[in-house]
Image (cartoon, rainbow over all chains, first blue to last red; front, side, top):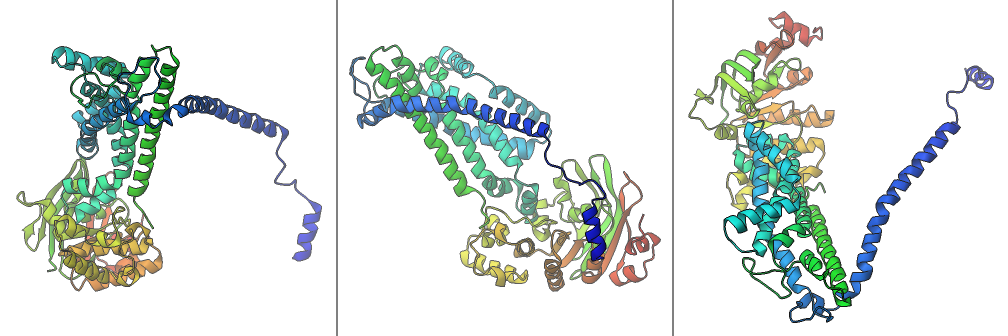
Length: 305
Length: 258
């Protein structure tokens, strides 16, 4: 047996099964690799550039403790100093109030769509409307709230009007992400709960939502981060104020995007610094929300260890 | 507390599809009844109709009667939630709640029903885990997530969860099909233990398993694709496996099916 095998191996009666990679394939591989890296560079270079510009121009500005504690009240446009506390306050409060309204609405709509709607006409119509709302530009949402809240109902321009417009932008995003998260909760868990004699509503509240919670909260945080940078609603629905206004329902109220557009009319060094300082502040706030989303989702995610 | 089940002329539908036709059988208390038959013959559907889980699927419909100690669980005045509390179920794939610890998984049924007394919950957790032969393996890590256990342990955790609410009947839908032979043996031993206290109905594709654990066996079959499944015969397990009265049963059991 051994001898015949050795003889066969030496003779090579059939051509070898495996050959080295052909030149044509090597070239194709090289071209494809080059293209992939090129696309990667084209995508990354502008991102890094933007980040670099924002940090380089804005970072020195935000190092001053006054930046975080003071408003621009009483300062002439060419005077340096002051801070954007009023705009940070506006951005956060408008965003959080928007979140407080949007999250319950979005959550209930998603629960209806996944757990109760099934293939009913209402569920289909809701999904369709949510799809359309997702694509509505922020300026359209802003103008809609203007015509409804201000022209029709007669309220003044205020931070709350901004929050309402942001709600229109945030609800569809929350419905979408929550719907996806609820859908990936396996039906077996719902059945396991029913089989223990747990009613459907309690199964949803105590089993389904907790299982999907980390994903839902990540979605909420990302949606919040997004709407806080929206510019059109603040331009249309709130007048800019260089001073602190704690009242969300009345009077002009600053926010970071609004402050940046207001300072664009200021050609001095002070205006330049404020724009870039506000830009990096906004980026920092949004980064903080994203980080928070990651931490919360890690903390809440179902564990196996 | 174990109760008997009488199924009378049960017809089951998914939308317009007639899934199971005219099943009648009796399940005596403190015994194991096995449902066997080819895939798609409706044995799981019948099992799920015994605790009103069938109707959870959209469009599912039930005709006929299922009596638990003489009480029709499909009577219009009966709350399906209470039926499921009385008739527990273990599923094909282990499905512990991923957000809960081992202890919380076991007492989930009680906790969600509003029991808050920690001492009582701890007692129930220990009793149920001992009942499911899992206590010794997990007693030092009750606060760890249930998802970290092995497949066989997870399935015993699910059995512990099902018996923690002290049902009268335990339904098992192919409880060992995702498990290795050693875990399967553990579950089968457990079933033999549990039948002292519970009425058990088990669906299985493993005929040796049916022969090993059950007292009574029901053979389901379907005549063709698109046809409803039927109960061919039900009898003592010994008789079904040695001398069945129907030829189809004999063919299926001896592997000459189809």
